[in-house]
Length: 319
Image 1 (cartoon, helix red, strand yellow):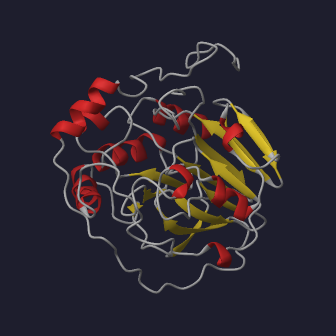
Image 2 (cartoon, rainbow, N blue to C red; image 1 turned 180 degrees about the vertical axis):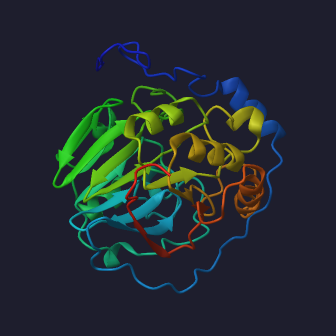
Image 3 (cartoon, rainbow, N blue to C red; image 1 turned 90 degrees about the vertical axis):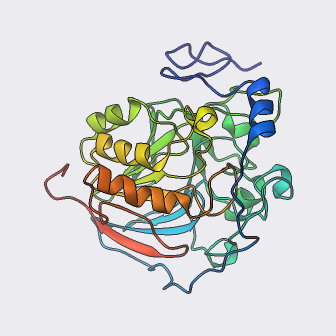
C-alpha cells in the first residue's frame, strides 16, 4: 500500500478534504439512485462550426479552446497544454461504459496540435481515460497516486502547493474539494487537485472538480494575478448529495470572485449527463448568478464547443 506525507489532507494512506466530507457513503448513493428526478437530456447535440485555434499567439497572450466537458486546449507563446483529455464515447471504464457523450469532442484527436503537457486533475473516468492519454502521448502532470492509471512513464505527481517546471511553464498543483475513485475499493487512495500554470507572462488557473470552499480565496491570495480561470459549473444536482463535491453556478461565480481571476470560463457541462440538472440548466443558472453578484458577462463567460478565445495578461495584476 503506498504511503504519502501526513498533512491537513492526508492520513498517510487516504486523502480527505480539510473543509468538507470526501465523497458519499454507499447508503447515500443508494438514496440518490432511489429518489433522483433526472431531467431528460437529448440523445445528441450538434456542434456549430468554429474557427480553428491559432497556430501561435504572442507572449502575454493565451488561446483557450473548449473541446468539451473539462477538456481545454491552452496555447501560449511557447507551450501547448491540454486539460483532463477525454475523447471517448463514454465517461466510464474503457471509455465504453457509463454516461454517453451527447456532444462529440469539438476537436478530434487527429486534429490536435503537438501537446507539450497534460494537466490531469484526478482519476475519475470523466477526466482520465488511458486511451486518450496514449493518443496524445505528452508528459503528464497530476496529483499524488494518479500515475498508476496513466499509460506513460513521463508522469510527475504533485501534492497541493508543490510545483514543477515543464518547459517554459511553472505548474503548481493547488487544492480542490472533491474525492477520488475508479472502483468501489480504492476510494480516496489518490489525490485530486487544480492547477495554476505560469508561462509566457500569463497565469492560468484550472480548478478541476471542486465544491465551494475557502481554498479558492487562498489560491487567489497566493498567486495574486490570475488572468484566466477555468471553473466547473455543471454536475451539481441534487444539492443535498453533490454540494460538497461540485459547485453550482452561483458558487462558481463566488469562487471566481474569491480567486480574483480577471476572467473565468465555465467548464464541466453539456457533454455527459452525470447528475440530475438539464443540459442547459448550468447556462441559465450562470446568467442569474452573474446578475446576483454583479459580475459582467465578459468576466465569467462560457465558450461554445470548439470556440477559441484569446486572452491577454493583466498589466497591473489583479483586477
